[in-house]
Length: 269
Image 1 (spheres, helix red, strand yellow):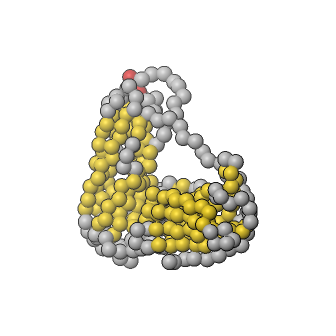
Image 2: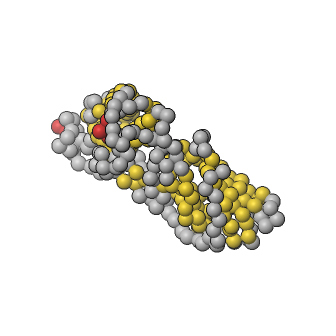
Image 3: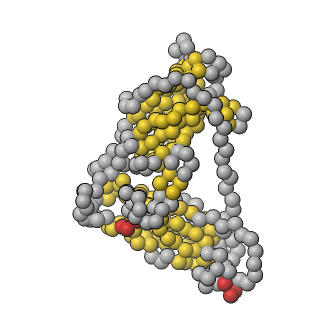
């Protein structure tokens, strides 16, 4: 098992979580689209956009880069600014569609993986296709004259991650950082940040095991991370049910499907 290390006392912090809003259009599935490909290969995909209202909705699609960090930052930079961006490989056509009321439209895209690169391509490359409703009164709207008037409407854009894994190359490497005990919803939980220090994006299956001073396992909890990109990080919480006070040993493992990483901590409550 890789990456085990021990630390001392963990401290208590407080955190808050944002709440979602409503939407006029939706991408209900396929917000993470992955494909293995070789240099020089061309492949295609589709983004299925659903209109959840009783009137036609205009939608624009555009590209950004994307990277997320455990401290809550999610950065959507200009296409091609992240070192592992594949935005330049992707063509979305059309980039503007009208979705009829209570209907769906499939928007195709094409990915052209470069045949040659310096250094050679290895691991995973990704970016985002944003799917965003067009406000009826905006200059971009072809329906503006048909929908006069002003009003306050909450609009949510959807980020569709398009991930290209270069076949047979790269590996994830999970590192555990900043373990701490925090209070959430009236209970104490263990927080730990997980960072991908490798060059391949990966899902994670996580498992926490809590042992008392006598070595008896008093709690087990499992969680998952949909995808963790190279250079990115995520903050994971684990409950501490059964830990009422005293000294405990905590073992956390992260299974990528190819490798198993872990960390061990001493927890004093």
